[in-house]
Length: 320
Image 1 (cartoon, rainbow, N blue to C red):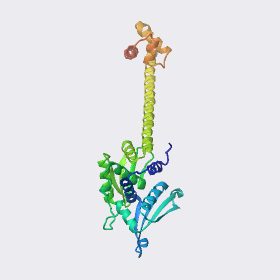
Image 2 (cartoon, rainbow, N blue to C red):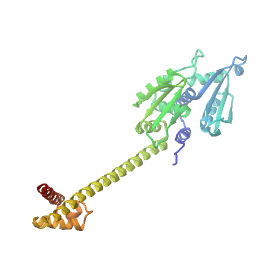
Image 3 (cartoon, rainbow, N blue to C red):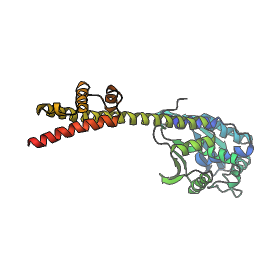
Image 4 (tube, one colour):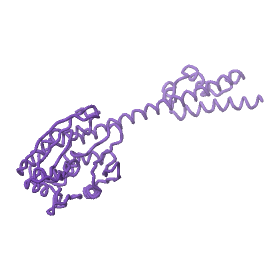
């Protein structure tokens, strides 16, 4: 499943494929969709059709079809339109225009976006999110409406945007009830509810029904960790190689000093043997020298090489 470069679109399309079997969940889904991406227009005409209108806009065709079909189920009339944006690479935008009618008013009331007194509901209708399945559907609607996430190669970040602070506060509260840790901020006249971190983002996507997208995040995290571990091992090997090379240079320099001063023959047989080994194998580390020496331990090899370096230092001190 390739999502690189279009993660937001991928998880929205996946969410739009989830089928809602229960009426309560369909209403919760619609509430999330309309609160995050719907517009209620009061036009001031004479008839219901002219007086007001509901509009919904999205770049995901299945989401537009969901909105159109749910209003249609209430008996509302409307149109599904398509146009291209003037920016963002001329991408297709799908708009649903629902005509004003008693059926539309009833639908908006059932969907928790319009009160009995014909007032827009700026918060979350608690009656729609009492059950776990309805909470999941509601979050799915919010993500479909205005959810977005960054490229998952980086630290995961997901956000949902709304025009109403009351709705943002209620949504954040709902997410906390579901054991997430949302943050909030205001941005360009809107209100943002966001989650940070792979576990939080993947968890919310899974809750909403985007299981493939959640798994994709988890897989990327595993790949990232494996690469990090490989880099750490490479860096560790390079550091060990540098330390081995520096130590070998000091030891070879000490041997040269002892030879120049005529002190090699005065060394104990074990150190003379170590001198021969180091001269024959200047790039071997301690473990490798130990194997060549017949199974000596690293500490034994290190001890003998230290004694050689110390002998050279003592020889230099005496000559000053």
